[in-house]
Length: 290
Image (cartoon, rainbow, N blue to C red; front, side, top):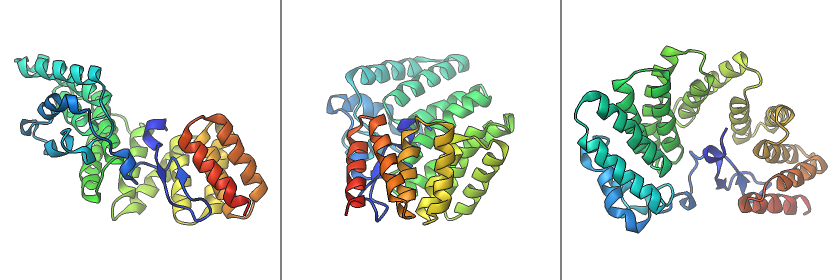
């Protein structure tokens, strides 16, 4: 699982004041920074009503709560250029190519919902596993940042729609299947997602992404022994996985294994200089010392 897919700090476990790297579908206000104000015109244009995907208000610089990150001037220029080329494209082949380039520009600027829309347009013109996977991944990334449950439901449904096309082409694409599972977790039918994750583990017992998500879900349901088993296996597979190391420490601390937890927290802290991780580890260690 990529760092961008799981980077968030949330209040969650009684033992620690804050937890690190839960899936971003649990969103706080720190994750919703505004787009650069000097790019308002380009941003508004890129999310205009004629896009047909109904999130123009979310995308504008005037709506900071809807933005995921601040775009650089270079990213905004790339958006303006790609949008212009897309609008000028006349034949279907050229327009599909420009849609893909415009989607890349939106993705680079962390405007994942629009990236998903344009990747979807490109996929419709040139259907295939790769093109639909890009659309699905973009919608999934937008889903993880959704500021409301309603928006999460919308984006999760779009991600599943794209991934269904991927799985039609390649039922063995476990990354797509794992992401589909996580979109279900946020719905009224979470067991469907858990079932899919178990299917992924059955097909690939060493699938790190599925193991991580199952571990987090076990923690959220208070099954710390089971969570520890998942994270221990993940750490055994990849000793450099800082998120798994930290969560293994949390799980063990919750089951009373304080000395082992302390070692893991210090190991996680040594692996990364990220200030959010450092703060979370320090708080966890402080709780252990009480």
